Image (cartoon, rainbow, N blue to C red; front, side, top):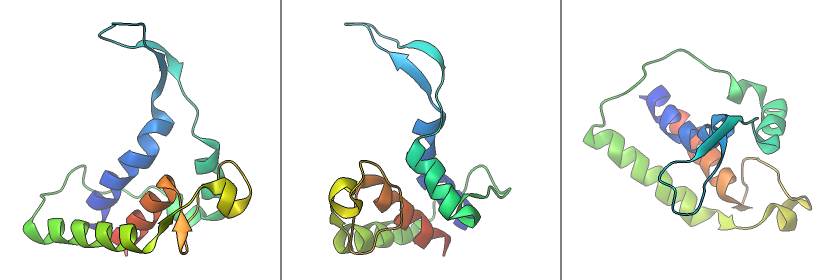
Length: 121
């Protein structure tokens, strides 16, 4: 259960890091692919500070979403959304981009990292 939920949340964080750089023409149905993108700087710096939290562990590629798992997802989502005040990294850390576990405040990726940590725990 832990690994599957972690994967679901990681997709929100890591997928943009492994996606391709693309450009869309007006009225185009598909994006033009230019090649692989590098991982975001904030992610790389986060993994330097929290190496154990960035290790990949083998596990199932999918899990069955039971009522209990859904309840866990909703509860963690609610707790983090209720307790973390949305704040920019510039205001919080004095820098444009920093991925970290939020205390009382954080921005979008901080919310995801906290939700991921709670789901794993």
